[in-house]
Amino acid sequence: MATYRLVTRKQVKPTAPTEYKVLSPFYLAWRRFRRNKLAIIGGVIVFLFLFTGIFAPIISPYPYYQTSYYTFIPPFTMPGHLLGTDDAGRDFLSRLIWGANTSLIVGFSAMTFTLVIGLVLGFLAAWYQGVVDFTVNRLLEITGSMPGLLFQILIMTMIGNGTLNVTFAIAILSWPGMVRLVRAQVLSYKDREFVEASRSLGAGTGFIAWRHILPNIINPILVSIAFGIPGFMVAEAGLSFLGYGINDPTPSWGKMLGNAGQYVQSFVYLGAYPTALLMIVFIGFSFFGDGVRDALDPSSDRIV
Amino acid sequence: MTRYLLQRLLGFVFVILVVSFITFFLMWKTPGGPFDETNMPLEPAAKANIIAKYGLNQPFYVQWAKYMIAAVHGDFGYSFKYPGQKVTTLFFQYWPNSLLLGGLAVLWSFPLGAVLGIVAALHRNRFLDQIITVFALITVTLPSFALAFFALAIFAVDLRWFPYGGWNPSGDPKTLVLPVIIFGLGTVGSLARYMRHGMLDVLGQDYIRTARAKGVSRTKVIVKHAMRNMLVPIVTIFGPVLTNAITGSAFVEEWFVIPGIGHFYLDSITNRDYPVIMASVLIIAVILTLTYLLTDIAYTILDPRIRLT
Image (cartoon, rainbow over all chains, first blue to last red; front, top):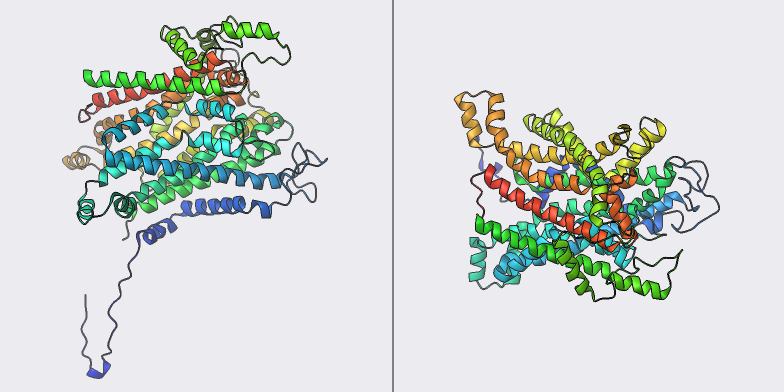
């Protein structure tokens, strides 16, 4: 309700035209995200994990492969080795730090692969329909019926262990979900008026895809990325745990747990630390992903 | 309907053929063979004989075709690792353990997850809902191999409440407790999340409000109107849960040394036991595909609005 006041001519100051600050969708999402305590906790964990993983070469006190005669030193008992050493006398803390690095590399590279395949195949199938859609759908059906773990192990036995190989084995079976998502999303937008309008103005397919379709479908894709990366990290840890993943001496939390299986009754810390880290990081990612999903969903905003 | 079923059946045959072909190709490309004995090397001539006997010297597509023709007739061949043992016989030795593990896990986790999800939805945004949501999120996230480690370290090594691994369903039921709990935990979480979402969807519908406005009691609305529509999400998630239970969890079986098919499969990979690997992949692929098909058919029965075309 506006109130009116008598003012003399002198009091009137020329006012600048009211500026409306345009809030970008991502700013609004960030505002929603900020209010979610669990999401913030998850975000902090994810940040710490990324930091550790990226700067592993700098912050790890020893090279992860350096062995010594001090084997099975329990944590907090020996100066110089904060978390003790493992069965080969390697600094345990350094190996845990480098484990984050491995996990990170596998998770993000597998996601990149999935994203590229998902966007390209999903878009092509939805846009061109017909034979392309039919072919993509058959591919999806075939990949979807392959028992995941069995196939990953089979592929790993064929190509051998290693960071790159385990990424490949995970990624090669992981794209169907992304393709389905992109395809369904593109289908729901391709016949909208704004796409038609853009086309009538002479826009090409690539331009429409990039400028009109992608901004509209980006939210579910982001959510899928937020849940996909930890999913791939779990897959890597699982394969490494079974012995079909990362090669020695590269550390991987899953592999460290797998190797610690024989020491559960004697040196329980060898399994406890990597497993605890793994659990904390995965829970962090899942809180974070949940927060991202809620934040990107405008209907969850009850204040605006 | 008939047309649709025929189409799906055709698709099913196609998918199985391709999956088996890819599996065969992968096995064929994998370095090492089933008869690479290191401790008891065979005479080259004898080895060649054995390889010829199993047809391993033929081109791989010929081997594949022969295998598939036999498999259609129910003959999955003989294991290389356990000569004279039929693959099917071996399977029926290991499978019951996985089925028992999976079955018991589903038996406790499915109802619990469903109830938790519904309770959470009915207490939306209140304390109980938040607790259940966080619990569900955590159980969904944590991989079974990590949980199994802590369960063993705490309850088997430290507290000695349960034996350290082993599997003896008839003699020592205590051996079942930890694996069954760990195997089912993920299902609880995913089901609770799924049910909560589905229930909130249904409760937001107009007909629920209408029923309430007419004066139908809250309990009756939930039981009679909302629950009935929850059957569709239940069926959707029951497919994957069931296949998971049937096909076993290699991780849980590894940790608790359970002679199930997950364990069996890992062994056969190490031993390059081609017929067993092939049969495992085929059987699981068939179960997966059939579950999808049955789920789709179940939809039409539960929700008349869904039509198969």
